[in-house]
Each structure stands twice: as structure tokens, then as C-alpha cells.
Image (cartoon, rainbow, N blue to C red; front, side, top):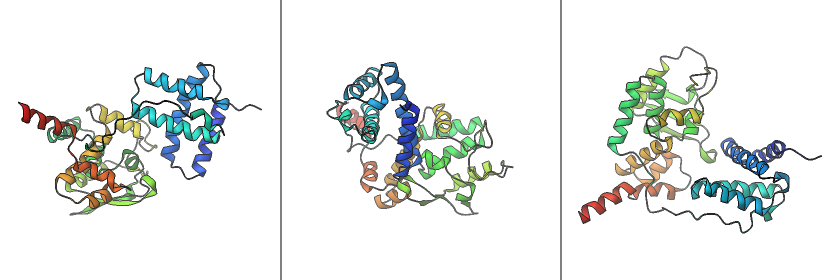
Length: 282
């Protein structure tokens, strides 16, 4: 009996989880494959009988839709794993995908001091204590947004002169503890003082108080201020490196398994390169 697209994807996700893939990776795979399946069905294809033509055509569709080379590369990586699961590795052989420009010698984009001050000023003016605490925590701990969403109240310890937050299951399953600065402790304390419930999650949805906050909610909240959560993490790492903190310590605080990822923060960013050119040729 022929399986539906949804059933095939369900079997694939179950297989990946059984092989040790994280829930976040499985969620990304599901979203990617659901979009691909919708497109494939409309194009007259069959996900259970995947062909190289299907994959190449989808890559072309994504390019025409204006997707970046990095995004297409991630989609193709997912389809490569999926095609092997189906027993059809030929479906991704010699598929042409746009080349990604490597920026190994440029630091990831972070907030300039004025941008950071503007963000904090605006989020404080809006007065939502939960959103203020989230913004300060992301900026002053460098947590990934998925790590922040997974936090429980018991993961935060706040004392009179110190505090810490424990990430129980970071990327790659690695746990770590990050100290909390005075400002992070201040706004977390203010937020927690408003909580009269007994829910264990540190941050709850505004719309469904019984539910843990979702990454999409945080992304949407920060989008109002023109910021993506990744930029706050990058700013945390960049500030530490600029302050002279050694790379190994920054890697530990950020939860980087590969220290070479951390070394990128010691490189100039695009804005700094532009200023160098302006000074040299103005």
C-alpha cells in the first residue's frame, strides 16, 4: 500500500531521532521536507519515487524565489539525508547548487554599541518585563534562542552578588553554565516577581500561559526592533573578544564545540572593513 507524503516524512523523522538527531534538527528537517513535498505534489512528482530531476528542479525553484545560497545549501543537505533514507542516493548525485561564498576571515554580524543601546532603550520603553528579560539574557549570556526557550526556572540561580544560568542540553548535547551579569540578574528578578504560576518553564507564551515560549515568538518579538536573535549571540561573543577574553573561555561560554568558530570573532567585521576603506581613501 502506497504511503502518503506525511507518512513518509514521519517515518524519516522517527528514523533520524532514533539515530540521535536533536529535536531541533528533526523539526528543521520536517519543515524543509513539508515545503518540498507541497512543491513536489503541485509539480506532479512523487516523494516516494524521488528523482534527480525533482531535486534539481526544486533547487532552481528556490533560486528563482530569491533564496540565498546558504539556505539552498541547507535544504539540499536535508534532501541528501532524506534520499539516502529512501534508498535513492542517485536523486542528489551531481545536482547543481549555487556556490556559497566563504567568509571565514570576516566576523559574524554583531550589533554596534549605538545599535545595542537603541535596542535596549526601545524594549525597556515598551515595558514588557518578559521581553526585557529575554533581550538582556540573550545579549548578556550569548544563549542560542533554542537554549533560552528550553530553560526552566530551576536552571537560573540568582544571588545578591552573583548568578548563573545552566544550559542543560546545548548544541551537540553539551551542557554549560554561564554567569549572569548584574543587569541580567536585575531584569530576570523583575520578571520572575510577576510570575504567580507554578509552571516550570522560565519563559511562557503570552497567548497560552500553559505553554513554553517558542523560538518563533522570540524572533517575531525582536523583529519589531529590527534585530535577529543570532545577532545578540554574535554581539555577546564579539564583546568578550574585544574585551581581551581568551578564545578558549569565549568558546566555553558560547558552547562552541569547535574553537575555530570562536576565532572568527577576532576577525574584523564588514562594518569595520568599510570604515578602514573610508579612512584610507577619503
